[in-house]
Amino acid sequence: MGEITLVTGGARSGKSAFAESLLDTEAEINYIATNCSTQDDEMATRVMLHQHRRPKNWQTTETYLVVSDVIEQSNVSAHLLDCATMLTTNYFFELMKEQFGDDFTVIDEEITKLSEKEKMTIEAEILNEWYKILKAAKKVQSDLVVVTNEVGLGIVPENAFTRWFRDVLGLVNQSLGKEADAVFLVVAGIPMKIK
Image (cartoon, rainbow, N blue to C red; front, side):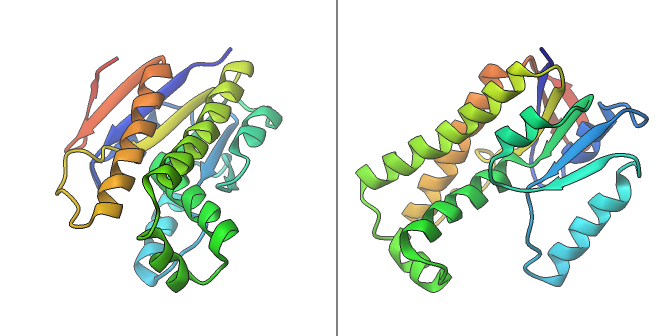
């Protein structure tokens, strides 16, 4: 069984670069890129910088669905999943598209109307998806390094939906931290091992 490592930190803290440094540049690494859409030029530039920083021999899988299958079916030394926050967000919007269709204006209107029961159902589905990912990681010999944003240290969001979703992301991070063999917090480019 491979090891699970969680790397967390704020935006632009250096967490992705640190996570990459944990892996052998000569080994077979599968980079699981979860930001599969580049909505604007600035985001496209960020993606390009990440791509150029990675060793050329690493393979890249761009997905936010069936990540557990990717982990189970790839015969590599390690997987680097960057990042859990984006994966969770993408998976959430996939659930919304299944329920409300592809029009994001409609989705934005409908998510403000979600009842507490509906939110709990969505939360359970998201956590179950992460359970499948962790279960897959524990079945294979490949290591798994997961990058995530530390969402509880910033500004409190202004609306109830965003505060709830921040809490969901926090629960995902807690689940990952509990199951990980090692956890690092990156602050100002400096990694600190906390587990």
